[in-house]
Amino acid sequence: MIENKVNLNQTQFSVEEPILAQPVTIDEQLVTADLPIAKKSRFSKWWWLGGALLLIAIIIIIIIWRMPHDNTPVNEETSPISNEQILSPLGQRLETTKKLLKTADPTVQELSFPPLNLELRID
Image (cartoon, rainbow, N blue to C red):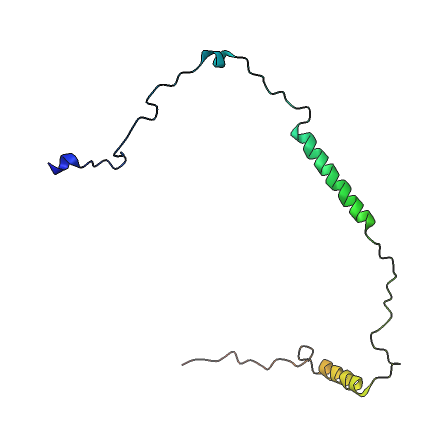
């Protein structure tokens, strides 16, 4: 008895109605009427794309043309600290420290590696 009251189909709603209870009528005049057909435009999408690319190219050329040009010659002979400059005591200490650091650089040392004993055995 209980089985008859319980609907085991879970996809079915409790209150269902057909969507189109009354049939829809289509007017025959609308179906046979001559509708205006959209004409193809004179300018297709390729013309618009080409125009946009040309405009971007012209803008880039104008930007490059208006950029300031740096025509100053490069002087490579000047050094940051010349020997003719008179250094303060702090500057002298700084220069001596730089020289000491250059001589104490471990990557420049020419010491050879210690000899390796390849006959080690683990017994």
